[in-house]
Every structure is written in C-alpha cells, then in structure tokens.
Length: 277
Image: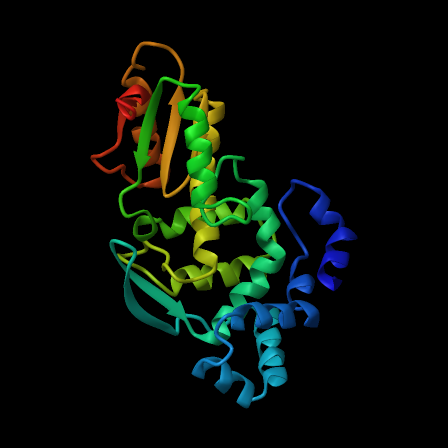
C-alpha cells in the first residue's frame, strides 16, 4: 500500500520520459520488506532463508539499503544447477540476499519495462504466459493465412551486454540505478560480454526489453498484421498468396544489425492451413 501510494503521487511515473528519482522508492523500508517477502515465498524453510533470518533480517535489509544508496551492490554469488523442461537448461540462481535486491528493484521498475512491451508480448508477464499466448495464436490462425515463425538462437545466452545497457540508458535516467543494473549484467556472461542468466528475476525483464524494440519495429514499420512475442515469436499475415521473402530477410537482417542475435534454421514462412491439414 505504501509503495502504491508513493507511486500514485510520484510525478515522474506519469510521464513517458526517462524515469528519474526512483531510488527513494526502491530503498523505502516498506519496499524492502515486500522484496524480502517475495524472495522467501515458497521457500520459507530453505537453509538460505533460515540463515538470513538467523543473522537478523532487519540488519540485513539495512545493509542492503546502504548498498543500493551507495550504488555498490554485491552481486554474482550464483548457484548453478540443471533442469529438463523438457530440454536441458542450466539455471543460475542468485544468493538469497541478491534475490531480495532484484525484487526491490523490480517492485518499482516493473511498470517502466511494461510500458515498452507490445500488447501481444506474453513471456514472463503478469496476466500473460504460455496458455494466453496459445489462445491468442489460435485466435489469429482463424483470421490469417500465413505465419512467420521467428526463433532466436540461444536468446538469453546471446544478449549483448553493451546493447542492453544502452537500451536501459534510454529507459532510466538515474546514474546510481543504471550502475546497479550494469553490475547485475556484468556479473554473468555466457561468452564474452554476452548473456543474462536464466534464474535471475531481472533476466526476463532485460530479455523482454531487449526484444521490445524489434516487436515494435515489426508491427509499426513492417506493418505485420499481428505479432505474438514469446520465446518463439509469430507474425501473422493475411492474403491467399505466400508473402515474399522480403519480410523474413528484413527481420533477419534487422536482428543481426541492431541486436547481434540470429534466428534458428527453423525460422520460416508457412501456411496456417498446413497446421490443420
């Protein structure tokens, strides 16, 4: 309630200009306690959570507050493990203290990332998700004749750090906040200056924001009839004849030039009628 009240009276939050003066909201005691509650949700009895409380959660939040205000945060203490869902993925889970930091940041910054998303962006967003994306895709298959499947190759692993930092610079104004984001980005790399970890709360926000400019470009510049953005994107087009390869070529070149990422070989234009035989 306190954070909502602060936001409602915060003039910067009513503008599409670069967000400024958000740090006071992030370090509000109420926001830090909310971040702690979110971070421990579902793992209340884990060793990491118990150790945090045993060491004194109030002093822990106070120390985190001081770090955020100073702009020098402790990040990069990761625990790696593998899951199969169904394909193999390496998960990079931050220490519990870092999880609180991520929640504290995104409690306040969430809506700024949201404002940059197209309506039909469904990955890791409240009220969206896999089933909503499938329902939307089914709706479009009844209206359009063709679709272009856009699958970015190893997307999280290939996000360019410098490009992501530049994008965040255009969204947020505070040097301290941007410095914290840079520290989080720099704390992990899959290859040199590339990659965000699967497991950080901030990573889906960074990934969605990284692709949001491309989503807008497809809808507003290429004039695709519809686009669904998920880990795999789909563009829909009407008409009885197969669209020319120009749409696919422009999309591929745009990704390579602006975001330094590449589509998988499975990317192709296909008739929707073939889905149903």
